[in-house]
Image 1: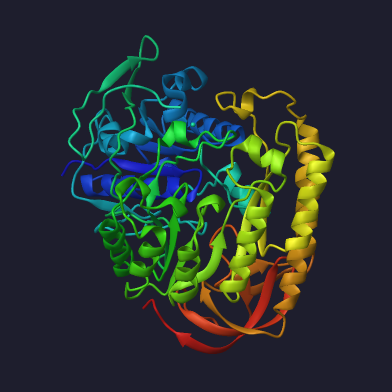
Image 2: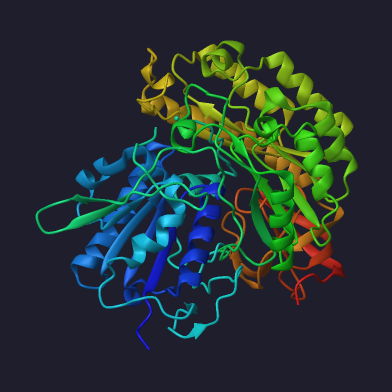
Length: 543
C-alpha cells in the first residue's frame, strides 16, 4: 500500500478559526491523510492563521517561518498556510515568508485536501487514518479527535495565538467583527466554478493559490475532527458581520453576515452531542443578529428555544453577543430555557458616548446600562463577561477614567482588555490622534487592575457555596495562586466559567471523570480561580 501523507496541523486564533481547523482536519482524514502529532514525522504542515490584530499576524508569520525552516532542513516536504491572514494579505504574504507551498483563503476551505495532496512528493492518500504521536494509526470516523501531547485543545503541535494567550492570562475574549478580501475564482461545496492559480514564488518553486471572493453560502461544519476535549465543542451559528465597527477588520476578511438555517444548526448540535459533547458554545461574529439575513423571524431567541430541546446538550453557552440588538425576547429565552447557561459574553469595547460613536457601536452608555440592568434583574444568577479596548484614537484621560470607574461600579464577572491595534485599512486606523503604544499599555494595565479587585471579591464570595461543575481534565499537578506551589488538583468549571477564556475551579480530593458533572463545595480562592471539594458525583456523561 502506498504510504499516506502525514499532516501536522497548527491552529491559531479564535474559536471560530478553531472550527475551520476542525473541519479541515476532518476533510484531510477522510481523504486518507494521516494526522500526526509529531512535526518531525510529518510530510506536510498546515497552519491555519489569524489575521485580526498585528500581534496575531506577527505570531503567524513566526510559526510559518519555523515550518519553512523545518522544510529547508529536509524534515517537511510542504508548508500550507490557510485562514484569515491569507485572505487578508493574499500573495503578498509570500514576500514576507518565502518557502510557502500553498495558500488557502477562508472562502476556499474545501480546497485544503488539494492544497495538501497535489504536490506532496513521495506520498499519496490511502485509507483514512489518524496517526498517534508514536505513529500508530486508528480508523478516522467523522468527529474523531486528535491524540494530543499537551494542551486543552489537543492541537497536534499545540500553539495558541498571541491573542488567545492574552485571553487566558487576563481572562479575556475577543470581539472580532471587522474588514479585506483577495479576488480570484474558487471552487467549493456549493457548486461554484473552480480556478486553481499556481503563481511563481521564485525561479525554482511554484505556489498553489486557492484564494476566492466572498460568496453568500455558509460552509457546513459537520464531520469535524475535533481538537477540543470530547465533552465541549464550539457550534458556529453564523459567519461574517454587518456591524462595521471602525476598528475591526473581520467583515473585510469574513464578509457580511450570513447565518446557517436553524435546521442546519440543530443538526450540527445533535452531531456534536452524539460525538460526546455535553457543552455547546454558540459562536459567530455577532450572535444576537442571528436570522436577519435568512428571514428567520424568531431570531436568536427562537434558535435558543429550539436548541433547548436537543437531548444530551446539558450546557448551551452564548458567546459574542452585540449590545445594540439584544432584545427582551432573547433575555426571556435565556432566563426560561433550562439548558441555556445563565452566562453572557457581551463585548462592550467602551462606555464613553463619544468613543462609542467614533467606534460606530450604535449604542450609548445609557442604553448599555439599561441592558445590563435588565440582564441582572431578569436572569437570576447570570454571569456577565465583557471585553474592552484601551487607547482608541483620541481617547482622553477623562474618557478613560470614565471607563475605569464603570468597570469598578458595575462589577463584571469576567473582563478582558485589548490595547487598540491600529489597522491601516480600517476607518479608525486612519483617524487622527493615535495614542502611543506605551500609553495604551498603561491603560490596559490600569483596567486590568481595576477588574482584578472586582474579580477577587467575586471569587471570595463563592467560598462556602455549593454548586455544580463540569470536570475539564484529569487529576494533575497544578500551579494555583501566587507562590503557593503545585498540588494535585483537577480542573473544572462552573456554569459561569467559559472554556479557555475564564478562570477555573480546581478540585481537591478523589479523582472525578473528565466530562462528568459533579457537585462541589468551594473552600477557598486562589487568585481568580476557585478551590473546591466534591460533595457528591452528580452525573456521568462520558463513559
